[in-house]
Length: 447
Image 1 (spheres, helix red, strand yellow):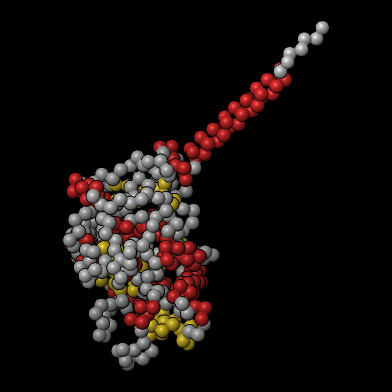
Image 2 (image 1 turned 90 degrees about the vertical axis):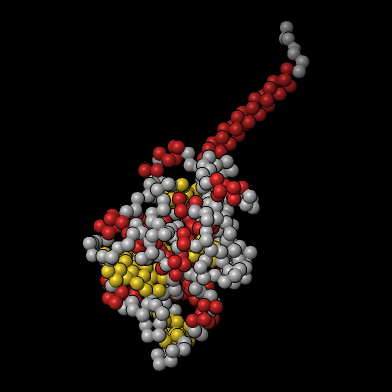
């Protein structure tokens, strides 16, 4: 006799469906948990454990300052072209202990990391380094009151950066010459390094050797085109040469003080052609002088092939800049086999932080409180793509400082400038001590 159970097949099917649904939920939950642990994007939404320790005065000012919307992408008040180069900065939350422990086993990428508080900072005094530091960049000599920015140190993600010491630098650069060639940001990096080497102390034994490199005040000029100093103890020379566009400038009429200048986009600066064989470490930079106002004020006329430029493809500022940088770096790369001792770097652009206008239209950078503590800057490629493209395929290294500088909007001279007109702020140059010190720490680690 067969026992018939009505409805049993339906119940079995329903239970099978329940079991399948439970398995699907379990698998999805497991995948979500694994993704949460491993994904930088998800991790970035977690609250940071690190908090900036501020003085009572600074904390009070921070409390009443305008709130900012937290975001994983740094906003910039600079022009659209500069934003395109610098706004791809990714921030995420604090690093886990496991990640910290694995640092020593990974390759070091100095572009990635975070700003941390270090009470041993700054590396020199903004009051004391009067021998090398221009007063217009020494914010301790101005009316600024918030100096929390001086206590920040850059911590790379995958390694411990070598501690900078003046004696170690001089020993490493014994019988060698380091040259900065570029604009006023290059000059800031040069002055920063001189202060770092000497710890900001007066050093009467350092020799002025500018004449050896033709760095003298020209007839009718106010200052030389650069400076060069030698440390006799190790025969180490550090110099700076002003070349804001990294191309050759030639007066069209040497007898006329008001002459125009041929701006040879396809020629490197004469200084490099004349002294490259005497340089062991070279750091080039260019960027912010590529605008019509600068060219008009300096009476520079674009030349290519020894003639005024007629090629419309390189007539605009962006194209002219790229053409010039590629041309100069291509020439430099061709010289490296003849100068095997030379280490050459091209420094990426230093970001501006003008908000609500430019330097001449009411733009400002009034923040004085560091806002990037406990966050990591992450990027697989440089945020200055034009610089990265210029060095690609050459033996010239990229000194990539753009992303780590982009999150330091509080470090500029801002409204405290000694020479600013009413309503004009300096959101381009940096307070010293400050961010350019980190550029030199990375340079020191790379050489």
